[in-house]
Image: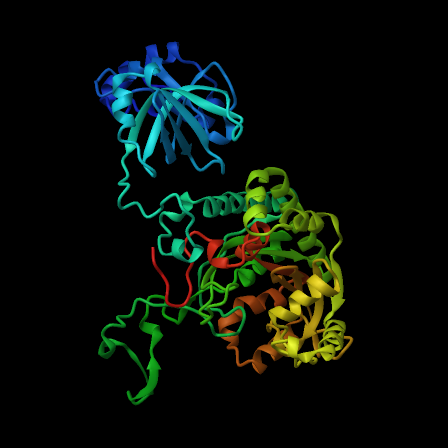
Length: 545
């Protein structure tokens, strides 16, 4: 038996051959398969192909002769080549001699119009056409030609049509009419088929790719930090507990005991899976710092969790954070990096997601594109927290009744209305607010020497329409200062022994920041509710799908 080459195996699998023939038959056919088809290996990896009619015989490897290249609608251009289109039907219109089937495969907003001439197709195709309804999955073959209509540049002149998956018109939840975003959240498994959610998904994908590209090109190392942790990075205590103890049987829970065997109150987590209390992480920062103190510049990009009972349009219980950490860096370095990263990523979206941005501009934010262009072109402003408070006090004094939170002083944790006023009205641009009061920031942020530690070397980036998008700081690299701050917050040093070791062994100034990825998606798409920025939103009272 001759061995089948990897190239031949890929080609056979792409045409569904290996699914319909024995391994022995596949191997014995490898020689003639290799001589008939010799496409470049790289093109095989890129090209999605399909046999025009699925074979059910043991000689299905021979069907490679009839392979038809699949074309994504976003890449559709006029050509004499016979190609296939696969996707889901948005609409179908039938006339006396032909039918117009609008098919969307998710690769673009507009999809493609497929024209089925009744005299140009077989009886089998006409039978299949009678089954077509909105929402069903179809495969069509034909040639892509310049469109005679004004709504699209090209269309498919269909030679065949096959219904891959039927869809009941009576029970399909997505009719042609527009649905509210609130309703679509109740059918989150189907909402990617709508224009808005599909466009968000495409932009989100491009954003994620551009962020990785920025850091990779900048020499950062991508680090995956753990989702399960015993450390509370923010010190806020709003964490989801992870346990394998039987919470449904309270009487079985192991309880803490004193030396005499008397229960002292509280569960004894020494008998839990990790032998200690464990939680879902609120940040990958502490783990990223360990690698920054060895590799120089690193970043994490992954899910984080916050058990905060918030129903606002800006908060999720599960979300994604982009968190770079830079060794031998200060707060100014972190601000410069955050600005460069955002300009790079948003510039990428402006260049590569024009159709989707045009859609968002039409239906959600008329000024979206100009807003994004301004972010890319205009330098970010910078203002100290003390000056920001002064500007807010002056503005609020003009008419306190216009403000939900008119009481603003040094030590106030800025509300969204304060942040948006600074970005949208005072500076009319993205703005870094830096040097925040120590008492409203996390324990790991470096105390400022110039004011006796009243403030910390921290910053927030405020953007128009959103408020806070990025939060960062220079980290406290001095062991004695860090231990003192942890004691003030009743943090247990033993839980952070490894974090303190970084200050014992070759400590260096280092800085970093966290970017809420879903908030960035909201900003770039011009949508208000963060629950539309993620596939399956998690928030208090909701963990469906």
